[in-house]
Length: 151
Image (cartoon, rainbow, N blue to C red; front, side):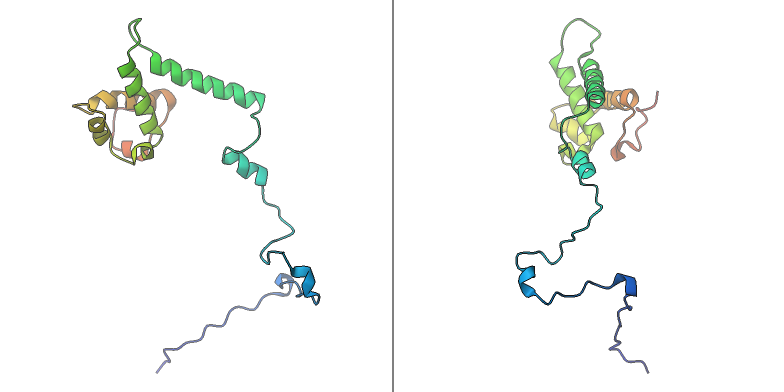
């Protein structure tokens, strides 16, 4: 019969992975975080860049960002007529935001979003989510069953 109180023994630390010796002079440790490593090869600048906390953009990045913004704005304000239709521009921007991430709207479906926007049918937004997907090659997980992203 086996014992229910089995003792697990931790693996032996290999010689090259020993913790450093505890210093004899305890005064040297005051104010030092014991988990702090003095040697690090972590890419802090890369992390700051990914989090959007980097310094100024490079000129080439700024130009690329301007091109992207120009494409988005041109798509949003484009109209078959000369007039500016704020309802359509608003729908396009909501569709773009939803395609980029439904979390902008608490992860709701397109149908629920259309109702929340006061639209009778989700087709009023679906046509623009399809346009966004085709024009900018974007899709989200909620569009996995949609066919309006195809050309």
